[in-house]
Image (tube, rainbow, N blue to C red):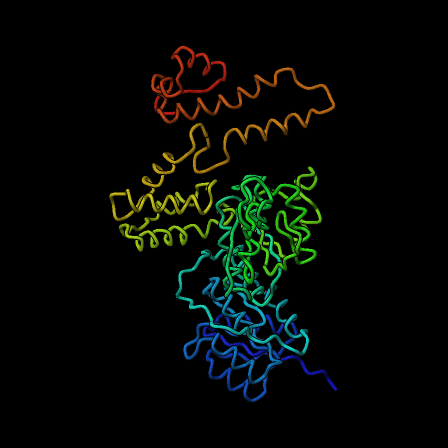
Length: 484
């Protein structure tokens, strides 16, 4: 007797998506029943049909998320995969809270969906139950913004941890939003009813960190007039966020490792162990593996903290999120009483070409500044350019359109050049070569900007006109009136 193929029930109001899923699942060896209505899907479920459900969130007759707990109550063994074009953190969290097996943002990768289908069908018979507690209102202000694939993966990780209490290590450059991710993990986790306590290791004198973390007894050190509880005690029942963990001194690292291993600590000057009832979330902008190699960070502590790693990409790696982030910050500025401002396409394009060394924090500051100071209701590319130039750190020479800083680019090329000649006889004119490589485009582009006017070019460069002429001749730069 032939083996019965698993049946997948698909619900999506988009006919093209139903067709794509039906074809892909059929090629993968599954039977498929597809509908554009939640009512039809529910009837199939009531009739005992299907081995797995794939449903969209927005359908004409019912929200797919509202359907998930009903399916789970009637048929606990039937897994549900939720899809949505509303690619927000709250969609991912609500899907997890209501008992969805997996959440996939649209547009999705068919290989990823097929892998999720295989996992769902192979999962143990005892299905996870929806988490208890009041669901967060999706209309509440979102702490995390972005629909890029990298941000979607962060949303899904947060959603998967809503019923877990695991230690998390968040890495990312300064200004990327590490504390926002930590708060989201807390607010949507098992300890959301407890306190969220944040402490920045880099902002506290090294000699005070142990007292700040673990508290101290009266007389433990000069000035300790009373017993004082530390951040571990303040965060009891909740989450302790250890920001810039890479700056923690070695002695404090040792004490923190004991807390993670034993689940208890002693205050400075104390002898009685205190039970640690906190979830630890750590964050760093440093390369901790490099710090381990340099002997600056304990390897055993790193592995204790790095149970669930989350990397937040810099803003330049998620360019598609820039327009929605900019508009979000302008809207937030308006709520705070600043004038309503809009961005034209030129402004959006200029924002996308900036490198954002300060990441999301830099963008928020820029948008608030423009909302307060820009005289026009619509912000154009020229206003963005002017503000970015004004805000650039003094002495930082970077290429146009947010390209790699000049010093960094030159250093990279010199390293490569020297490495190519390592171990053998090298050239004897490296200095002249490097200077020529920098001078030639500098003079050529300046002449182009002045349409070949050497007097203006010399003034811009801060050179004597005769000196400029000599350099043009020596560097063999062709000059014509009106350009180069």
